[in-house]
Every structure is written in structure tokens, then in C-alpha cells.
Length: 131
Image (tube, rainbow, N blue to C red; front, side, top):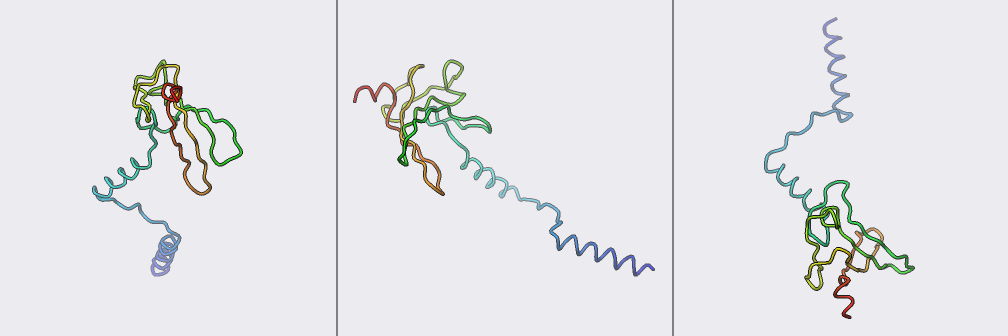
């Protein structure tokens, strides 16, 4: 009787192992740092204040419909820099000047199939007026 119980337990253990029931791996401290670095690389940044966006935070923007692959986009900023509550300075990527409270950045937004979207900043409301 004991041999039958032991044999059944071994069969059950083998079935669990075969189905992928395994204990979670313990990662070394070096591997944990690499995982954190990879997460930081994939995190999103605000194009105006260059601050890291947390989960759920988005950059406020407005796109204008177009039939081509690129559309015009107005970028206003993230919750950390958008006026009046934002405390971070919004800087234009073209002229390097501070964007006024009622200003924004104008750019071309490219949508590509099977690739990441891309924003090419053309300038802010101050430096685009001069042209």
C-alpha cells in the first residue's frame, strides 16, 4: 500500500513539473539592476519638460486629420508642465526658449505600421511665427 501512495505522489509531481508548475526564479542583484535599467529605457518622456511620465500620465496633444502618413500635431505638455498647475518649465526643442502659458509646440506626427510612432518637432508658437 505504501508503494502505491509513493508512486502516485511521484506521478502527480511529474505531471505538475511537466505542465510548467515551477517555483519562481530568484534573480541576482545584478539581474535586478538590469531589469530596472530596461524599464527605464522603455519609459516615456515629455518632449517639452523632459520629465519621466508615470503610468497613466499622458502628454496632452491635438492632432489634425490628414490622409497622408504624417499629420500635424499641437503638443501642450504633460501634467507636470502644463499650465497652470505644472511646475516644470516647458522648453522649445527648436529655439530653446521658454514656451509661454498659452503657447504650445507644433510638430509632424508620423504613424508607421509595425513601428513606433514618431514626432518631429517643427517649433513652438514663438519661433514658428517668425518664419
